[in-house]
Image (cartoon, rainbow, N blue to C red; front, side, top):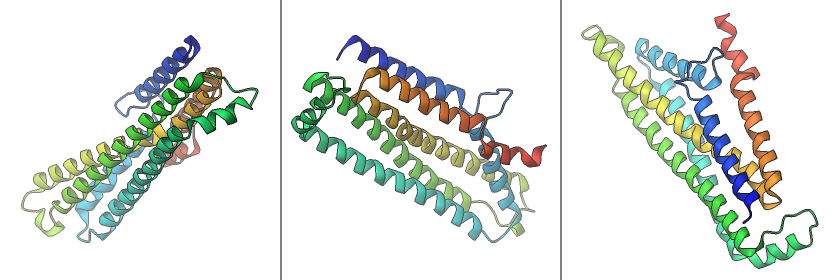
Length: 229
């Protein structure tokens, strides 16, 4: 590990933290981001459930969200297994790297530290996806606690409070899901560290640029704003 490696790692963490801060749905920027818009649509969906007795639509949506979360959680498990396998094949990988002229040679210890960091990155993603899956499960239970349309005339405010609880739980589950997915995206930039700390910085910056564009300047964001204009 060299000074350049530590600088690249610090830049990686700084960019990651800055992106999390900039895309937090609580940030009230003049240009609204995609996450905040989707949170508003999540709230609209659950409030609409107050006006229908058949909750099958809502349960299917929750089931789809859980299925997607479970898929990524299982994917990170495979990625973790690959990282441990890579640690067991350090010598073979080093022999391959030594034949590549553009690879930054940091030695065995440096390589193992980088693989360890990648393992932590996927481990973080797994825990985020696992907790998100659990929260979506809680959300489905809260959705089941929303009164039927015929019963809302007795206490409309209680029904609305039940819906708001489900909204908050759904938004929180989505927040953890997005955090896990973001870590997977950033792992692409992290792979550049195995070549060079400079490639690490460039790839991380490119990933952050793409993610920021999707949050603030994407066609998906424009589609959500279409009916508001």
